[in-house]
Amino acid sequence: MRIDQVCAGFLAGDAISDEAVNIRKVLRGWGYQSSIYSWPPHIHPKSRRECESISGLHPSPSDILIYHFSISSPVSKPVLEFTGKKILIYHNVTPGHYFRPYSWEIADKLEDGREQLAALRDGFDLALADSEFNRQELDELGFRKTAVLPILFDPDRLAAPSGHGLPFLRKPGNLILFVGRLVPNKKAEDLVKIFDLYRRFYNPESQLVWVGGWGGVDLYYWELKTMIEELGIAGVTFTGYLPANQLAACFERADIFASASEHEGFCVPILESFHYGKPIVAYSAGAIPETVGDAGLILNKRDPIAFAGAIDRLSRHRELAEELRRRGRQRLCTHFGFSRVADLLRGYLGL
Image (cartoon, rainbow, N blue to C red; front, side, top):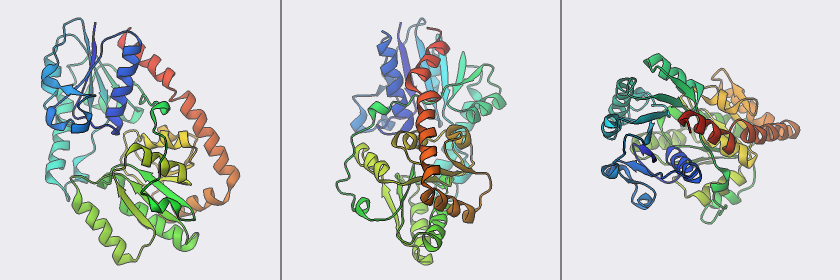
C-alpha cells in the first residue's frame, strides 16, 4: 500500500511543503512507499527532486491519498477522482479581501479557493486541520468528520545558522523579528508603527527585521517603503526571502518575535521561536492564541501603544522573558512534539 501526498505547489522552506516532507519521512519510516505530487508550474525548479508532477500519480484503490489544501488548484480534480481513502489537511485560505487592493489575480484565486474548499466537503473520509481555528471553518462548511492535526514540525531539519551577507545582524541593540510572507493580512504596516513607538519611547538602538518575500504584491511592499520614508521611521529591514541558514541566523540573533498579523491559520514561525528560545508578543488573531498558548504575551486589543509597552516589558524583565522561553520549549516538546503529532497522524490514517 502507498500513502501519497498532493500539494497545490511545492517550494522548500515553505511551511506546507516542509510539512509534506516531514510526513513523507514518517510514512517511509513506517515502511510505506510515499511520494509528494503537485501541479508542475507550481513546483519550484530547485525542488523537483522532492516533488513530482501530478501526472505521475496513479494510485490503486487500496492506497491512501493526503491532500494539503490552502488555495484553489487544478490538482483538486485528480484527487477527487481517486476512489480510495482520502484525507484532507486544511491549512487555511486567507480571505481574498486582504489582497484585492494589491493583486486582483491573487484575491480571485483565494476566493476561488474558498469556493473550491466548500465543494470538497463530501469528497474526503476525514478532514484534518492544523488548528482548532481551521477545524471550525471546516465544520461551518459542512465537512462531516473533522479533527485537529498540528503541523508536523521537525527541529532536527533546521539548518545550521550562517549570518554571512546579513550586516544588520552585527548591529547592537534589540532585534525584533517577524518571519512570514510580506503580505497584507500580516499587517506589516501595523508592526512597523508599533516598532517606531518602541524605538522612540523605549529603545532608540533597536531594529525590526522582517524575513519573507513579497512575490505577487510588489505594490504592497512599495506602499510600506513609502510609508516608512514619509514618517521618517528608522531601523526597519525587509530582507525578502532568505535561505534556511540565514533564517536560522536571524532567529539566533533576535531578542523577541513579534506579530501584528490579523489572520493566521497556524503560524509555524512561532514553533521556530519556541525552538530558538525567543519570547513572543502578538495580537490575538486566528490561530495564534492556541499556537502560542501560555508561552507568550497575547494582546486581545489591537493597541499599538500597549504592544510597544509589551515589547519593552519583555526586554527589561529578564525573569519574565526566561519563563516564556521555558514554557515555549516545553510546549514545543509536548503539544507539538514530533513523535506526538506523528502518532496522531498514524491514528487518523488508521494504520
